[in-house]
Amino acid sequence: MRRTIIAILLALALAVIPAANAFAAKTATVTVTATGGHLSIAISGGTDGNGAVPFGVVIESDNVSTATDNITLTNNGTVAADITIQGASSTGAGTNWTLADDGVPGGDIYGLEFSRDAAPAWTVIKRTAAVTYLNNLLVGAPNADKFGLLLSTPTTITDTTNVRTMVVTLTAARH
Image (cartoon, rainbow, N blue to C red; front, side):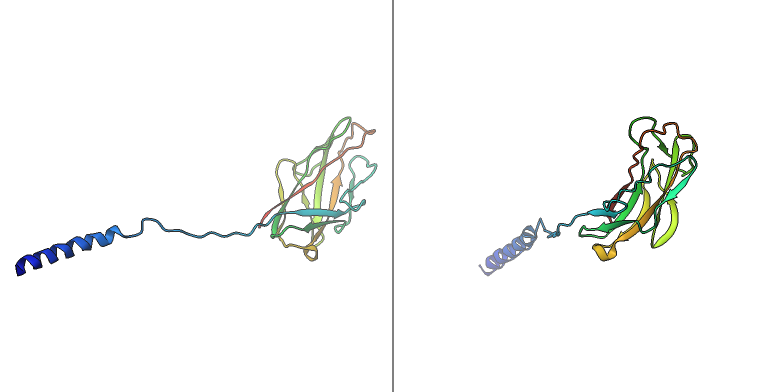
């Protein structure tokens, strides 16, 4: 009888050992948290206070520019931003001007460049690809950046009666 009890206890003990693995966790969790933020930039300054730069009447093969602190770019979002800048061909009635990616004017082809007040070298603005303007623009007005524009007019201007409108786009991406 004693052997029977020992055999039963041994069988029960062996039965419990594999059962311990059956109680192991089959799932685990990871808690993820995040705080919402946003990218937002604003332009001010220029001749009208809203970033517009009306050069007025220009002549062929001329270079006209603003001061390098004429336009202000402010990061009014909630995260630091990397900023790119890109130009476009002109719009309006009559013959439009094409923006030269190499900055070299031609017949109805114009060049456009920017210069940051903090780094006053002229950089070509392209039509076909965005160019780095500034990396890590911090949030808030004290961290605003100022820049100017240089327009190199076409060597030949076909349409001398209609205003040409050229748009420069600055885009923010998370730093």
